[in-house]
Length: 112
Length: 114
Image (cartoon, rainbow over all chains, first blue to last red):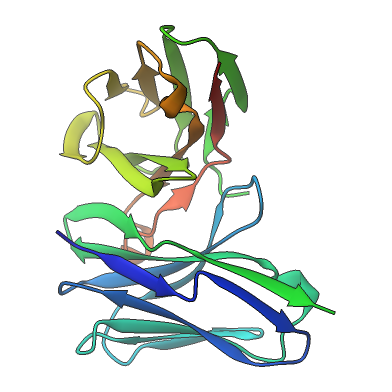
């Protein structure tokens, strides 16, 4: 059974600082997604990572994927308050079986 | 706005009752997925339909059932409700656009069982 672990679960960081969220998964995967969720809201797609070594950047967020290590990272650069949210990684086991297995989520709070 | 719609937004009901949650996928998407988000279980996959046919089942209770209709909208039926069924229920849709089958999530239905 595929297991997806994220750490840390909770992260408080000051504005302007850098930090990384880690996502480990237990079996070979085709694709990995990162989502953002604001309290009581839906999930917003941030990144889709399709292959080993994939790196994608959007604003202050950068995601990468190492399929050999079964590890993805979400790096936050010079954090701002608007980035406060819960971030989830989600893994698809193989193309054709499209169920997403989600990590536990990382609740990020940016302190002014 | 993802283009996926869900109704109702909120639902409050009593134990033992039955409710139906509705989802309309993005235009052109053939796949609909249902997920449950609760504090103790996190985000869990329930079921996947593709063009009217069930494709995969996850941790879906026998008291729950779903279907996808010819117009591609989907309904999730929850019966004999228990307190523990209180959760946010999301549907997501995907299609062949872009080739990566990215799932786009609806706004969710918040179910409260009293």
